[in-house]
Length: 122
Image 1: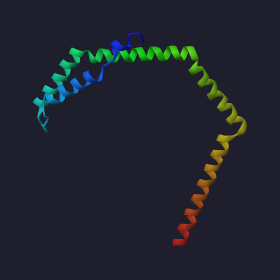
Image 2: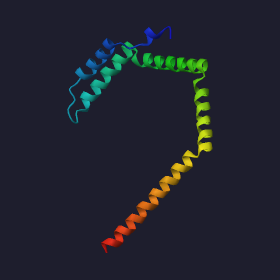
Image 3: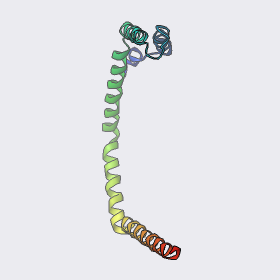
Image 4: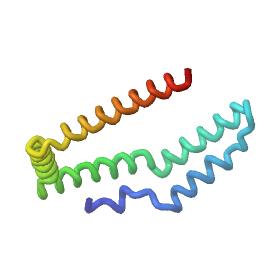
């Protein structure tokens, strides 16, 4: 990330792009020429300021840095270990099974009450 300053698109560049794209045409419904002009101007500004390349470069640098940090701090491994431990504890304590049983019991009771209500309406 030593070259991060070269990869950034500053607010002034963004504002120039935005102003160029919006001032290139006042878009009216069905006005394809204005749309094409605005798109063309935005493309010119993108080439002039190399926005696409800078954004792609910054994205690649960020992904590389994230990979380095993951490797250094073993984030993915720690998450997987925590997930495995949670599954183990769930199996020991039966939390998921108890929750599923409670949902089934409530669903059965609701169906029973719906049936009783339907009978009472008759």
